[in-house]
Length: 252
Ligand code: SAH
Image (spheres, rainbow, N blue to C red):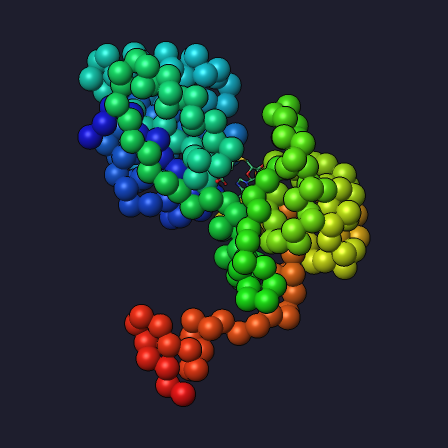
């Protein structure tokens, strides 16, 4: 087992973490979790005497200090991130620093919030005849977004879009998207997918901002955009009786 395990904790529901993720937390003497978004319920898997740190109030340097101190005492560390750590997880800088310090690490993926949101919405992102592409993005905040990835630019594709970290600016997001998507394009905002307080607001490009404002949602939500939220789509060929593939002969 490596000295540090990065664990994707999933979107919130403590049962939406992988078995491997639970085992890594159970085996850790030191746990550092991203307390701004990780459900503290996840800590129910921690050993009673584990040392627990909330990284919400820590700098990268402080996180690394805690890891180094633990590793030097032969302790195992679980570094717990929300959803999947590869999406807006600031995990790369941690992995690169550990590599430099010759500290071994592994990464256990998690259920990203955009996947939990689709489950809550009971929708498929990749409907035949609607879109076969999912764009995951964000509006720029303190972290800049390259100009070629502006929302207006991405909207030109008309693809299914999942927008993180941006619900506080939903007016502006909709204004930028309207250069590419028609005004009646369906939009859903999912607040705290998989948490007990989950809420869903549905509307269109034209009216979702007002609905989200009156619902009082200003953080921890995803904006999902596209025809996948509508009812028109083509049937999939994968399960079509007239279509054969490697695992099934055509029955027509
Ligand atoms: N790594 C995380 C994303 C971290 S960025 C993941 O894979 O989900 C933080 C943003 O993710 C939030 O601003 C919000 O847009 C989204 N988010 C995280 N958890 C969420 C949840 N349970 N429901 C809705 N959005 C969520």
